[in-house]
Length: 372
Image 1 (cartoon, helix red, strand yellow):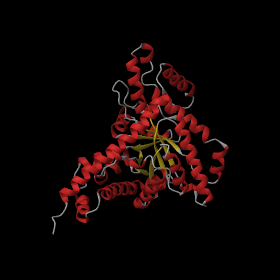
Image 2 (cartoon, helix red, strand yellow):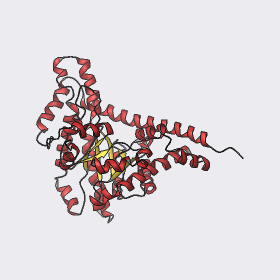
Image 3 (cartoon, one colour):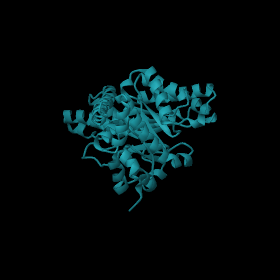
Image 4 (cartoon, one colour):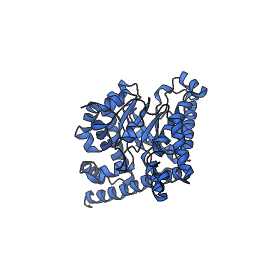
């Protein structure tokens, strides 16, 4: 079997797994994926934790202990999720050490209910960093309007950040600006910039899902010819913006002070439309110094039949711009789509968090010791 995952890694794409559960940790599965499938990082989100905790019995012992202590449901969730992240971080620690802190990272997200509250997001990020207490953690902060100043403040405190839920090129530029502002604050505080790392999670497949839906509603041949092109075009133009910002004089001054580039991370890379190649959002987004965080099904599909042909991003910007312009000419508003996707993304994570609260509360009640 050809080792497509190794070739992907050799092209400068860090392979991160977009999933985590206690079973994956305790069974040795995560360690096996690191050893055999070139996985060098893990991302989590409220939906992943909601699924993990609701589906297995791996959390029963901890839930029983938490119920005996009569902790609040919010505290129980934080104890459970940070325990998983801490354990995964320990498994990935050799990767972290071998890559000088670039990889071997595990991401944990701030409470999604705080997505529109800058001050609360900063406080939550500090609390999560303290709770997990591992140098190879990334705190996930959504790239909402309120999230942008929070990112700058948290980076400025020396906390490494995974910026999530980025859909638009304009917002991505604000994210990179916030990262540089944070590094400048950290430098003023005398912090070691070489210890601060960040990725910017640019979401891919959801862009096609929404734009294809609008293309299908138009139904013309001209429109149908653009199906499945917008998401890759959007991500490629994001990489162009990354190259521009991280070759600027402002960046160069920070790099001389020891700073690390904020890598683009391709998120939401599972293909939703069965008409498309199931590795499309991996093979079409190969570029140096990027991360691709994949659901397990996408990772296995890439391993099985992904065709890695080298850099598929550099030099594609003119065509990418033409594809997005063509979509706009159909009357499909790019700005409207990306704002809708951001709003839906926050809502989905909040709904998952609320489901997690309800299911955990039910478990705590079931396992609570009898009165007296």
